[in-house]
Image 1 (cartoon, rainbow over the protein chains, first blue to last red):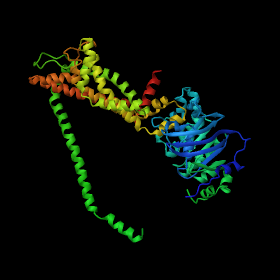
Image 2: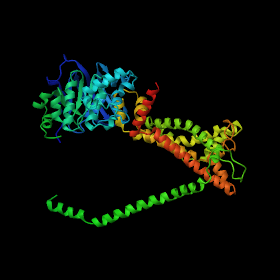
Image 3: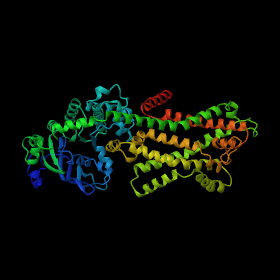
Image 4: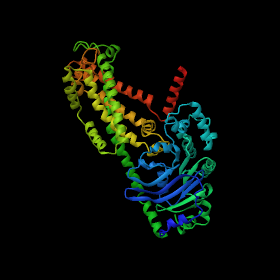
Length: 274
Length: 307
């Protein structure tokens, strides 16, 4: 096993390629530590996410990237034993402060999970509009408009526009995942969290989802967890490399892959371990 | 591991194929015989009930009040009516309480209160039904001073709700956590996720639980003796005794006349058919799989048409 560097802090702060103060940050995670019971899964991670950019989190299995992603949406509230310390700011408001009801933040932050999880009892239309309908939006005109808009954004509209009443579970895996992207976009979030959205998909569906991400970047702040380094290179502006719960290096994607500052990062992006 | 060793293992794994196939056959045979052993009593009861019961059934038998003892005249009209009333009332009390308790146990059941509720619920489920009958007798019949339909419905609801609670809890737990997460990530409140997403996905299991409990209370006799007592008249009001099929079957079977015993068989057949009809009816009306869709669409179209 590679030895852990003891100079993580300095490496991150000395790197000039990370977003600068002048950039507008949509989300800021400050000294975030997440533990399950006594075991920390994410250790003191600080990342700033620039508005309207794609940030990728890479790293070997079990490095804590998914755990970290889920804390940006307070999804750990549902996990017993999970404890989150530190600050997560979105638009300057601390997501974990006691007065904040997480549901308002979750409406600002859409999430796409690793495995497609359309609601099994609902049609395509109902799935996309679930977040709206179940929050009290009944206006058919608005719903129709949003369904068309979000399905087009997710590159699914042409394939399903005539079968919107069909059960969502009858779609193929790749279509289901794009449906879940549309469902996440329908609540009109400002941030989109994606947890290995293409890991269960074939190359064509993957390519479509990557096109979607590139298109969405114009409007949304996107944070994507991925196993696939080529994918990180293709879609992201910034990349963070995580290892054993530590954020080892966080820089502009191009620079992280071509000129890694840290030995571990270099080894990982060259495929020497992981 | 070297190549020779691998080859050695390959031959090892290929040994005894015939013996293993033989064992496979034996196991299959044992499984099938066990199924037969289980089915034989069930089948023979059904055959017996149909054989003896069909002869008794006529329009008069289904609609009229019982005739004089041993005459072979009259019918079981009040008993059929009473059974439907008492099952309906017990369900109205027992199903909501059971479903809500099940939701509590499954969705908020990670604390000491829920653990003790679950334990007592399980104990409650195993209670002899006559105890619940005696309980209803003490708290309703004795207090009001007369036998009543309320007491019967109360006693049956007590039998019903632990079953419904348990099956509801189990079916909700079967719903993958990913659906809950997807709902939460959409910014939905916990109860909205529970009711609109989790309950919808768990519907099949919950309906099965409710039907199971209906079948169970449909055949209960002991608690009804203590509460609605039995009667030869049609239902008049909730504060008087009422008849029910299990009570009627019990009374008829105690009589020494052939005609009464035949009517008893007939009543048993009617009870089985009622439970069967409720099962099939509810299943076709409520259950999903692809059917939710067809059925949901049908209703939407119907409602749309009326408007």
